[in-house]
Image (cartoon, rainbow, N blue to C red):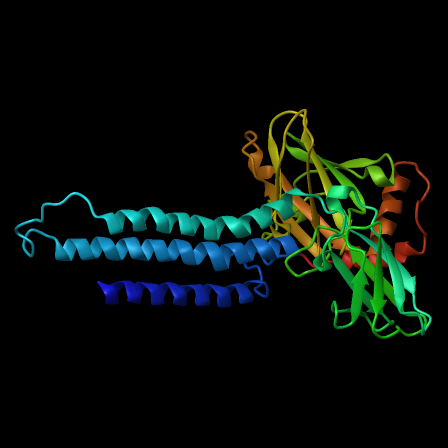
Length: 381
């Protein structure tokens, strides 16, 4: 019996290692027709969901299944009527009862603790902010205004992120190694760099209680996208950029490719890469659900109620989702297409939509050329 349990333990550990290695390759895998794996993540939250599934849930599920199967086989062989003609007469075993009560509790704790953090990150819209200052080649002391509500103030080193961008790319500094801080929980936090940044270099200080699994502070939303579900299409509005909206219907079969049929739409959503997007979701008739797997977003659209969530895309491209609530006869014909572009391309797209609505442009007209190249060259995923 001891050897049996030892073998099961070693097998479980091996499965955990295998799952961890598999999770490292998931992100680099490409979507293929007929694929059965999850889509490659395009946000920190989606990466956290993949890790939770691949490294925590899968080893536990496979381990329990193999353990129960082994017990069934062992009972069938050891206690059948031929090998055990005279059954033992007992009804309780204290050790086994303690084990089958205690072990499931421990398993649930292993699942619950990381799931709380994941659910919190998905549910709470980030409110982080950043302060950008210029180095003069000598100054090492910088100040970050910790003017959040009392319950959301920066309290710990992990809530603060310091970067230096000298034109060759932003470099994340390490607390204590590269800088020291004073004033956590107070209205102002003093940041002292160990080495003065070069003259003209940008010193970026980000603060907030919304910190992803990578250790990056997630900034507050830069825009709100209002999503309204209808039978059977989606309506989108950009309230931060003017009074315009549009409908997105499933593209006709002759207007798209066989691979994207039932996924492509006639009007895609356009959002900027690397920025936090707030989603305000509702419906006009029945319950729908706005789901985008690559961002780990799935939220119900309920008539008479506004549900809120958020996402931040890591890379540009075109990404697809679908309505995930059975909403009627044409439920399967409510696809979602999100096009993630650069900030200049997004601003040019906003100006083009404002022009269609009879409004003046909000941003520079020079971005139109950038937008045309970016929107035309976005790769579908």
